[in-house]
Image 1 (cartoon, rainbow, N blue to C red):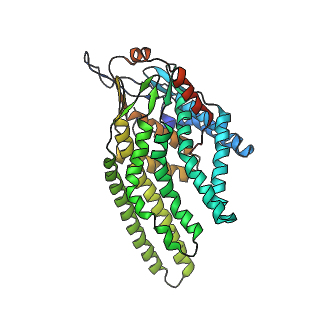
Image 2 (cartoon, rainbow, N blue to C red):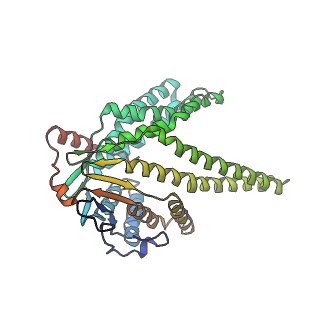
Image 3 (cartoon, helix red, strand yellow):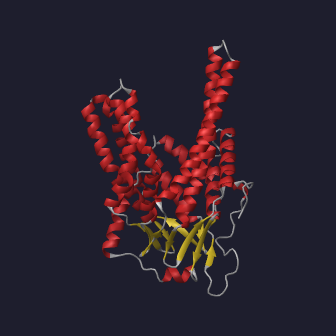
Amino acid sequence: MHTLSDSPADVPATMPAATPREPAAPGAPRILVPGFTGDGREYFRIWVVNLLLSLATLGIYSAWAKVRRLQYFDRNTQLAGASFDFHGNPRAVLAGRVLSVILLGAYHYAFGFSSTFGIVVVTLLLLAFPWLMRGALRFRLGNTSYRGLRLGFDGSVGEAYLAWLPAAFTFLMPGVLLALYPGKPWLAALPLPLYLLWPLMHARIRRFQHANLLFGDQHSAYTVKARRFYRFYLVSGSLLLVTSLVAGMAAGFAGAMAAGDRNTAMFAGMAVGIVALYLIYLLAGPYMVVRVSNLAWSNTSFPGLRLRSTLPARGFMKLQTRNALLTLLTLGLYRPFAVVAVYRYRLAHLHIEVDGDIEAACAHVATRGGAAGDSVADGFGIDLSW
């Protein structure tokens, strides 16, 4: 695998697919690492065409663009000499995107008509959101295959509501209270104590996602205590606090230097705020992604197969910082190269431990049928793209 200094465009398309890190002793598990055979230049061409056609069709082609993108990444992801594939229907993606626009538009403008209409729309959104998120997971996984076997997701509707409804309620309530009582902005702070439970909500969502995965007829196992998420939020919150303090001090200094010139002081404050947001994005964001991904995937397994994620937080921060700078310097044209770099980097730090040969393991996995097959097909009809 390549280091962080490698440009995605410099990685040869013939990069070997997943191979054992070291020869396995007789009877020992076989360690596999997924490989990616695509490159930045190739994906750049796909990205440009997708972007231009999406603009020309006022966004309608974006559904076909998403399917094309997922197929490119899945078909270039190899494990033990075999590639993944994506079989999603672009029309289902388009239907999901239209539904997303309708829901977001209704939420945004609902209180402009009346408070009663706004409450009705928010209630419907809260009731629909967990069901729709479950459908989106079933669509994405149910349309992904490896060695002819479909992945899948069998989380129940009840589990979806337990996982998603508390987080959705906590997220929406400040805005709803502000819309209902515009003259009393302090009421929007009433739900803030619920954010102390946000790590538990995040842990429940992750459990719903990882404990209900399917590979053929094999069901995943997931073993993570919810309280372990608090540590990640404490560290990320500390990074956020330090960054905010430094930004506040810098803004105060800039204002003092520009004393007497209101426009200059305002411009300096805005510049400091933008820099602070980028620092938060490049520090707290990658840290949270790495720690949660490592914890969740390293505790996800199937019979005879275990996953282990070893993403380094510092290395991922460096990669994201480099990607952000190059994307800014190229006015966004580096974006597809950045996507490939992140995808390859994450794959390089995902290890799959198999008891015996994965070929033999797949040969003993049965395809789903009957009620299970009908259940999976039910998830093929929607993709919110959220």
